[in-house]
Length: 186
Length: 186
DNA sequence: ACAATTAAATACCAATCGGTAACAAAAATG
DNA sequence: CATTTTTGTTACCGATTGGTATTTAATTGT
Image: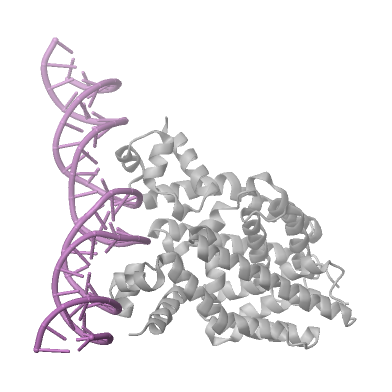
């Protein structure tokens, strides 16, 4: 059982459940290694969660950034975001990042800092996307870009969180489509 | 320090922080009573949380039901909901019910059952409100009433949760107004 | 005033948490 | 071959969790 495998086991566990509900003991047991081995590799629970988050960001969140920076038009990009949030099978148990963000106060300083950093990057990406849409002459409602970016980000987060709660995919898609319709209205 | 005072202390503590982050030990200490006294009165942590939730529902959630069943028009009621979510000082640290609902899996069976019950009642109230608006000839977008009810409820929950996260009140009002504008558009 | 009952507090329980010290096996180095 | 260094394990630490058995204090009935 190699270190990268351990990280994979931890990511799966944190992802499926809430990170705050998975103990290091449970992870060592699932990975079939001893506790000191884990601590020698990652230093602390905080270090482990940070490593997991980084791996998750590279493996999953990157896809969202790709969608946002794809240079497609407003409607097409919004549709891709809706598809991702309401249909991507990886989001069936929710998004690990959003779970961590929702329980930010329960994280150690390292992981919390990274969560805030990723969150800021996300906001920036949403804002850049909306700005470029506006520059391209596509109206995005009267609202300022930063407010729209936050709105967009929160609606995506809400949709994915609802998927983790076991809500019906079609229902979620309906609601998200409705929420984002404010961007594509006259 | 009477029993009702203890309930008040517990409600304040659960409300300000996340219920999952407040131990019975902490509550007995804050209330200045001994642990067996609390257990004699409420039976278990689950029993205490249930009692707190009931008290909270009567003291706070009832106001939301009053708004919904007020019989006012669509716009007026939506505005009242927006005011409540984004300006009511009691929501400055979020809504205890939404906090409990977000961490449903961490609750005992009694409290969890009540949370689900209240949630269902909320959905029904939202649906009844939208139905009456539609009956009164006010268009609420093309969508089915049940989907609209869920959307409305989740947007309110999102706004209040963001207040708990310390987000700017004006910003929250902007976003909620935007989200609910789908109901009052041609 | 004394006995019986109720209320409350002290002190404890087992389980679990994150984290580590002490120790055994294996691999690399001289 | 002998030695050092790395790897991994067992067994433990103090703190905290929800929950209780036992004992002390206050109240009540007679």
